[in-house]
Amino acid sequence: MPTETWFKTGHRGLEFKRHPSRKHGVKFDRYFRGRVQVEGKRKSIGLGWESEGVTETAAWLKLEAFRENMAKGAGPTTKAEERRAERDRVAREKAEVAAAAEAARLEAEKAKRENVTVTEFWNAHYFPQCKRDKAEKTARNEGQLFKNWIQPILGGIPLRNVKAADVERLKNSVLDAPPLVKSKDIPAEAVAQRPKGRSPRTCEYVLAVTRQLFNQAANLGIYDGKNPVSSVKKPKVANERKRFLTHTEAEELLAVVKDHSEQLHDICLLSLRAGLRAGEIFNLQWADVDFARGTLLVRDPKLRPDRTAYMTSEVRDMLKRQPRIGSAGGELVFKDTNGNQLQEISHTFDRVVTSLGLNDGITDRRHKLVFHSLRHSFASQLVEGGVHLHVVRELLGHSTLKMTERYSHVGTGQARRAVQGLDTAAQAAKTAGKVIPFGQTKAAGGDE
Image (cartoon, rainbow, N blue to C red; front, side, top):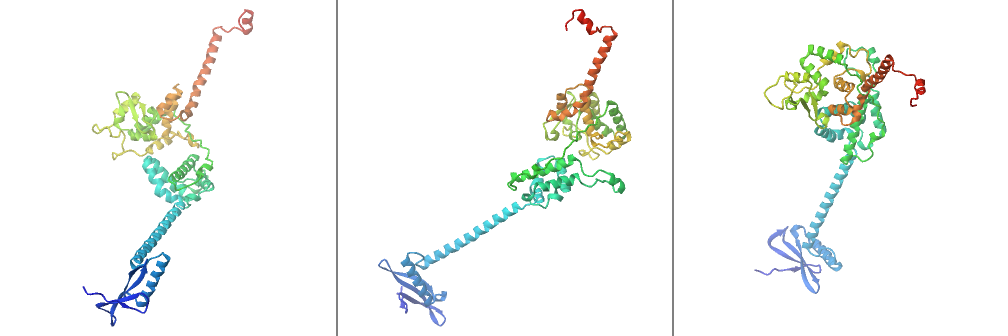
C-alpha cells in the first residue's frame, strides 16, 4: 500500500493530502488534518475534505477550536466527538420540542376541561352514562328535562362558571313558564286564563337532574367546587295523590271501561285489586304468574327489590282468560296490537273518566283521578278496611313507611266509628236503665 503524502499549509499543525483522482474545481480534492500534542504525544485530528466544504481556513479555525477545548478540558476535541455532540444537541432539542408540545397539549386539555360547558358535559358524559345505568323511561324523561329547561338556561355556560344565581334562574324559568298549550285550537283568551308555570314537582325533577350532573362532573375530576344546586332552595312540593275511588265508583269505572276496551279493563282491574303500577303491569310476564300460590312476582319495581303481589279470585279469573302463545315464560301478559310491550295507558281511560264526570269541578291536580289513582285506591281501601300500614307498605313495595303514611288519613274513619261506637254503647246503657247518678254511688258507699 503506497505511503500517503501529507503537505504542510501555512498554518501551524495543519496538513493536507491530495485525492489520487478526484478533483475539486481545477485542483485535486484535498483532505485536511491537524496535528496536536496531547499529554506529550502527537495526535492527528481529521478535519474533512475540501469537496465537503472544509476550506483551508475553515480547517484551521476548527483545529484552533479543538486546541482551545483541549486547553479548557471542555467541549469536543475531535470530529467524532463533535458529531456526537451535535447528535446529542439535536436529540436534546427534539426532546425539548416534544416536552414543550406535550406541556402545551396538557395545558390545552386542562383549559378545555376547565371550560367544558354544561351541554358538552351532558353530551359527552352524563347522558351516555344515564342511558346505561337508568331505566329507558327515566333516561328519556331526563333527556326531555335537559332539552326543555336546563340547556336553554345553563347549556352554554362552562361548568366552573355556573353559580347558584344561574340555578336560581333555572328554577324560576320552570316556575314562571308560560301556560302549557297542547292544542292550537285553544282560544288566546282561554290560554291567558291558564295558570303560569310548571308544577313544583317538575321543578324539583329539573333541579335533581342538574344536581346529579354536577355530582358526576366532580366525580370525574372535571368540576371542582361546591355543587351550585345545593345553595338553591327547592320549591315546596305537595304532590301526593289525595283522590281514591270508593268501591261503588271503582265498579262503575270498570264497567264503563270494559264497554270500550277489554284489555284496558283488565289492566285497571290489576291495579285496583293488586296495587300494581302501570309499568309493572306492562312488564308482567307469564313466568311471574303463579296460579298455584295465587301470587304475582313484581320484578325490579322502580329499580327496587322484587316484591310479591297477591291475586284476588277476580284477578285470577281475569288472568286465566288472557290469550297466551305457547308456554314461554318470558312472554308478556299484556301486549299491544303488534305483540310488543305496551308503553302507556290508553287515552280511553281519560275519556271514560271524563264521561263519568269523576273530575268535574276539580282544579287541584292532587284530587284529579288518573290511572295511578287506582293503585292509590287499592291502598286506601285496605287501610279503610283496617289493614295495618306496615302490611300496606309491603304490598305497595314502598322503601320506607313514610311513603305509606300518606294513607293514614283514610284510617280516621275507623277512629270516627270507634268513637261513635262509644256513643251507641252509652245510649244502649241508658235505655236498659243501668246508668246510676254519680251522687247515688257515693251514698251507697261506692269507690270514688
